[in-house]
Image (cartoon, rainbow, N blue to C red):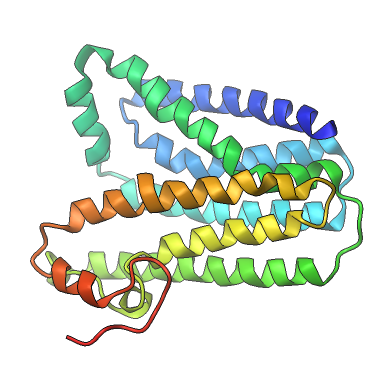
Length: 259
């Protein structure tokens, strides 16, 4: 199958990229670089497989462009957020806990693991860049509109959160304004929505249905591994979190409950 060649190509490109980021993190002694590189990794894989495939059909260009917009916005935001603040608290904690095994565990548990998850996540785009042949249709229009909805949720909620955090008067308070009034994690909801939208777009290409591993991976990761659970663990000791949790939907935006 042609897609196997695309997957192998993507895996090799991703392996080189991950190792380059790891070496840079070693040099700077800052594993937070992995967070900045996350979005860029998708851009590198999407556009590399697009160029190597060489067909440049409208659906392929749209899918890769959506990845470019999302990946660059995310990486730039994280870079600006982390700039001048040193290594993220998570990585500082692991650096202390892992001791002499920090380098090898970082390589395996942070960088290689991240690369593996990335490869699974981007499956819909890899299928599109491999098999695309049909003309654009209604399914593609629905997918793009859904993607725009998801991107709007992620970008706007990130912007609202950054503004809230930048105000010293909000120190120690729970962000429950804007989109955060209707979901405790509107940014994660937006990201998951975008990946399901790309999967819907992939349904228009041969074997596209098989790329469902992509949205399933990001959905599971965010809901049960490193997204919602980790964030809520950090928030649980805040005095206002219990009330916020009681009144606000955990993921899918919904009406705010009464006090």
